[in-house]
Image 1 (cartoon, rainbow, N blue to C red):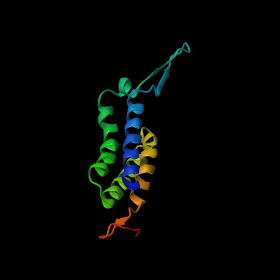
Image 2: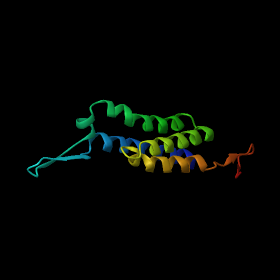
Image 3: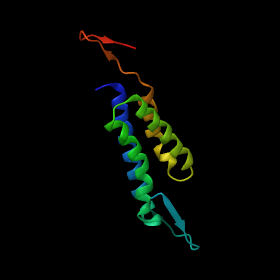
Image 4: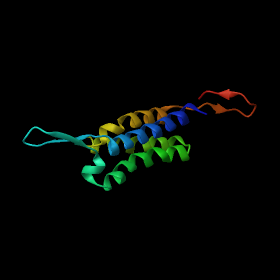
Length: 122
């Protein structure tokens, strides 16, 4: 498997893990006046719509895995970075590792196979 495809798969895995952490990890804390604090997950606080929000970066990283083309990986990396910046104060920071991995996947050049079975490095 080419290195760019491997990094695209790693980006998908990172986005999947980030989505699970955002939805199910106790990332919200609330304290009452008698100093009793408790934590809740984003799913408990925001409801089921948070699943749609975190599925957008996962789908963005899935597309380059299904369509193995450098332009698709580049577009996915740019849009994923835009999602991270727009949602930076809420869930965007969780998807930065996936954006980094997708950027690496987009910038990697795979070797070109010559007609005689050898590999030409572009």
